[in-house]
Figure 1 (cartoon, one colour):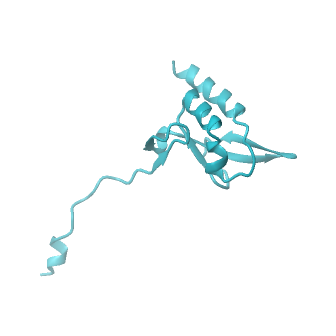
Figure 2 (cartoon, one colour):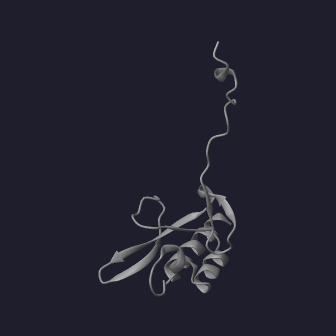
Figure 3 (cartoon, helix red, strand yellow):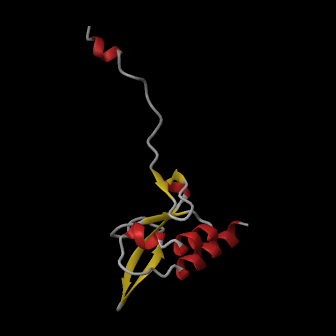
Length: 105
């Protein structure tokens, strides 16, 4: 008999993608975080929440808390994580996250 067959480890837990919040730097499963991306709208570029997680380009992950969005904006973490030159306006994302917080209360 082939001994390698019996030496294999048993079934392991399913793989869960882990991401880091750009605001608080805490590592969590991707399902617990919100993905943000930059979208070109007319002549400007806007930071938006990517609920489908399918928008092109780089994404930045943030906790669904206003405090984390504010911290990420204050530390310029969105621009750094998205490798975007210049500043990123996170006010639209902050409004959406605040609305999500209100719904979950």
